[in-house]
Amino acid sequence: MTDINVSHSDDLKTVTVPNLKKDRPKKEHYFLIAPGVLWMVLFLVIPLAMMVYVSFWTQTTFAVNPTLTTKSWITFFSSETYMDALFRTGRLWLTVLVLTFVIGYPVALFVGQLVRSETLRTILLVTCVIPFWTSFLIRVLAWRPMLGKEGAVNIILQKVGLISTPIEVLLFTEVSVVIGLVQIYVVFMVGPIAFMLSRIDHSLLEAARDLGASTWTIFRKIIFPLSLPGVAVGAIFVSVMVLGEFATPAALSGRKVNLLGNIIVTQVGSLKWAFAAVVGVVLTLVMALVITALLRIVNLRKEL
Image 1 (tube, rainbow, N blue to C red):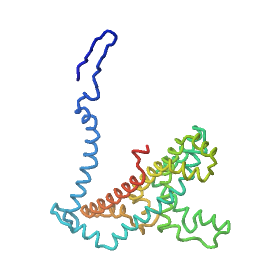
Image 2: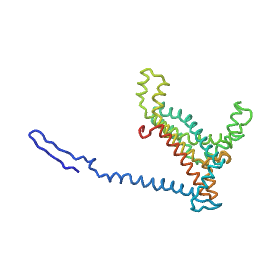
Image 3: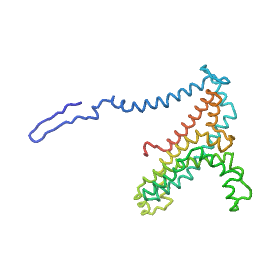
Image 4: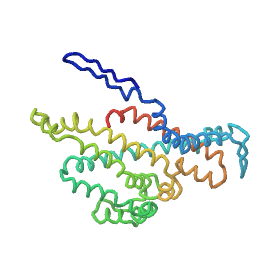
C-alpha cells in the first residue's frame, strides 16, 4: 500500500489516496476462483479423463482389463450399425432443434413482446412449465395412446375427414420420436427467448415506427437480432438434452430407433464398459462441437 502524501501550500492542500485495487494482493483473486476451479476439476475434468482412459481398455466378453488398446475405437468407427446411430443422432437433433425453434419462437414472441403485464407473462411461462410437474416417463408414454393406429390423433383426423385410413407412421418410427422430443423440450427454447424479448425497450420499437419502419423491418433488424442470445441459450439447452436422450427413443420407437444414448445404456447393461466409454467420448465431442458452433454464432458473454 502506498503512503499518503500531504503537501501544504498557502492555498492548496494535496492528498494522495492509495490505490486499493492496485495494491490489493493478487492472491485473493485465486482464492475467489478456487472453489469453482475445484468443482470443475472434480466433477468435469477428472470424469472426462477417466472416460477417455477407460475407452482404451481391453474389452473381453463380460469384463475389461486396463491393458490399453484401440480395438473398441476401431470397432465403433468400422461398424455400419454404430455409424448409422451417430448420423441418426445428428439428424434427429437437427430436426428437433429446428422444430423447437419454429414452434417456440412465436410463443416466446407473444409472451415477451405482446404481453405487457408482468403477472400475465409469469402465468403464461409457468403454464409452459406445468408438464414438468409430472413424471418424465409418464409424459413420454402418454404419446403411445395418442399416436397409435386407433389413437386420439388418428381418430380426430378421420372424424374431420382429413384421412380415410389410420396413419401408421405416427408410432414406433422416427416421426414419433421427433414428436415426443419436440413436445418435451420446446419449453427450453421458449423460456430464454421470451426472457430476451421482454428486455427489449419498447421505446426503441416506437422510434422505429415513427421513422417509417414496417413491422417486418422492425422484426428483422431490431427484434430478432436482440433475441439471438436467447435463441443461442435455448439451442444449447435443447441440443445437450436431445443428443443425450435414450428414454424417449426407446419408448416411442419400440427400440427400433437407436441413438448414441441408447447404445451407451445397452453397452453398460452388457458390462461392456470400454465400448460404452468410446460412445460416451464420441457423444461428448459431438456436444462440444455443437455448443462451440452455437457460441461462435452468438457471443453470449458480450450480448448478456
